Image 1: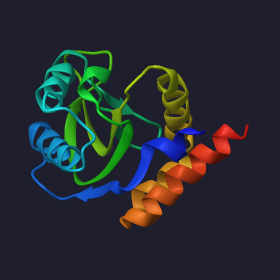
Image 2 (image 1 turned 90 degrees about the horizontal axis):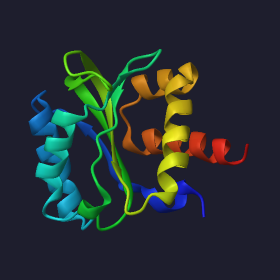
Image 3 (image 1 turned 30 degrees about the vertical axis):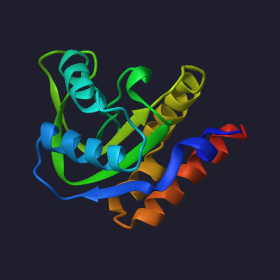
Length: 160
């Protein structure tokens, strides 16, 4: 089974127009994920703590994104929650403690075990480097279209 069949869900695509703070975004995502049964009650605080220690902001050739995630012990069911940010949210730059990026998308990753993690991260990085796909995502606000763009890219990658 390819990743797109078991980690992408139409209900986990959002356009977030709330307050532009990282904590507010994490609270929003955690509330939705809890409501839908994807996470443990420990997820929200664990994610905030991990983001403080190991930031997940990433400057791509097109625009900044973030890939917040935490340990599998906080996940009930694997997921990728894609949130387009109407207003950029500041994330720490991955691999640093004092640099920041203004992310336009957050890809919240929920792994319940490690097997899929490497393939998923490789596919995400390939997508982030694909300027055509990233331009499509930057312009798109329709949730169904966002899901289609991402899943189509992942399906194409898995066929390579």
